[in-house]
Image (cartoon, rainbow, N blue to C red; front, side, top):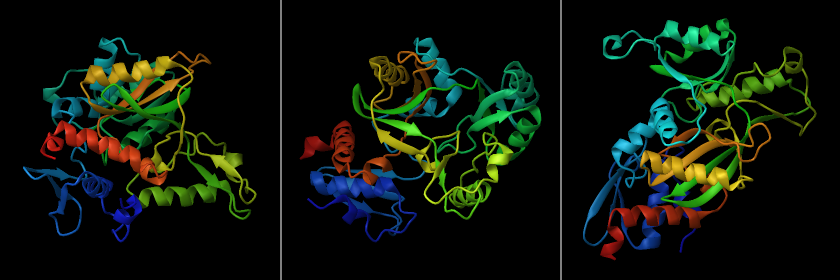
Length: 336
């Protein structure tokens, strides 16, 4: 069996992870893999002896065993919260607000831009704000003060139609990956950091960090959680300084394979995926809220989660397990 790195070798930087893993899994399970977009990996097919099934990268669902209704509901953070709360699963709460006038006649009152400021004031002008249907941690950050909210909404409106405003919550953050009711793996999520070089200030290191994010199509990290005086500190070579806020791997966050201290977190993750009707899901949650391991709140549920972490940690076995689940759900294994 060829190693996963052999399937990655020679691919351009933009080549989709999904296509790499599909080709790897096809080799393992004896299926045919065919790139049908001139080597871009954006559209490809997987074929058994009896049938051929097409897949797409980018915005396409990576997991066809999730039906389209369930996946669409999970992509909207407000819909997700309402469904989970109805199922008795605790969430962060919050409300949604539109940033543009278009389609205003087709939605209920109370969710316009001006309403966002009224809601923000009820949260003492400090909240966690993120695009309603965003991904990869883009524009997900703590916002403090109405002037900062104004700047934030102007920036995010260039890229998104609506935002979710939530109370600020803290705890130990985990991502729990499920195949049906099975916990395939669990990781603790930690913030990104800048690494001192003994020359540049934290401010300059953060500028370089943000330039890298923006080059990859992501919003910059906010420096509001770092005091103005601290930004001018020059870190010794090799010393880290965390960048508080989002922990997404795509935004420079760090992940470590570890399980929550309480089984309650795993139970909540299963219940969340079940409530949304997802067969494959990555549930992000806070545990240990207020120091209580059993105090759990769901952050969001991802119906199309990246598994690049498994490649980076040499867990090709788990990638194959996910693809076995996919091939089984599509009936391809019945053709072997």
